[in-house]
Length: 438
Image 1 (cartoon, one colour):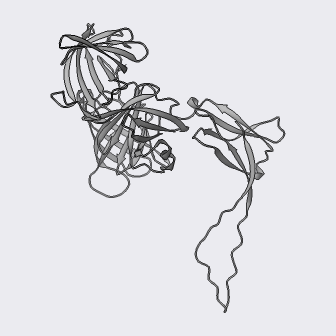
Image 2: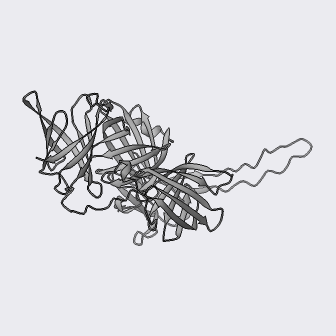
């Protein structure tokens, strides 16, 4: 990688108002602003790398001047004041995974995005593919590229099997929460032309899978050490509960504000949260969590006005470990399971994210290849997504699994074809059944 240095002149022009002059008596012009010489540093980082710029006057003793700078698909240009004292410059590599909250890779992770009170889900099944669940009746598979572009920001291009492209941008407020932005684009190259995406909101992010059923919706009994994002009319406020009664509030682009809080849960999915900043008015919020990860609030907010305010909140899902370390299984490698349905099928799972499905169709055995992702989701539950590469109609089977003590159990399956519900299912995209070891 080559680091180039060039000289350029930068001037700031400030206009306080229009200057007028007349033949009778012209006002004296204002003093000219100073022009400062600057040095332009330019280099192109390799994909997946990050660098600091160090400077030295003598070439022996170095100090950090700027960075870190991340690969963004093009050259990095940075300006330094000419009087910084450095005559020599060098680039120093830093592991991008150690800087900021944004991950270097999203393989094996999931994203729940709040969109005006509705939930959009992205599952990154592996290093190259995943599925986008727009709602309970619509989902499609994709291949993707992911790039960490700053300590707390990353960008994915989702390429659908139908030839569509979707830009997904994530800005992390902590390791699990932040703002998402999404927009359909005509080509992957068009992503660099988008400044602000058409759709945006708050997200929660985790390794593995989220649970979806309302029975899994549970607010924490204690907020200490946790975090939450409040969203109202597109404005996000990050809450970091630093102790049993202390909280730090931070708005996007704003300063942090410390405060006290009190949490009074009324049941698993409802409670009252009061926050009293050290300066400003208190927040009195009634929380309702209808499904894991995302809910609604009503109450008063401290930014002026009167009457009841409402919005959504997003918080990381708390998944308890299974009571039995062997059930649900940690992974499906080398296992096979029989899934009831119409018809009954047996799925054999390999260790590389692939498998073979066998089913009886009119007395003849039919086999097909599939890819899958699987993870425990807490307690006795697990999530499984199966896609069929090369299938022209984009087939997806998405399972919520509930195991019992002998590692058999039941499932709810949501099946999609061509982006919509598979019409062979009596209830649209959803069907129920049992699962047992093969």
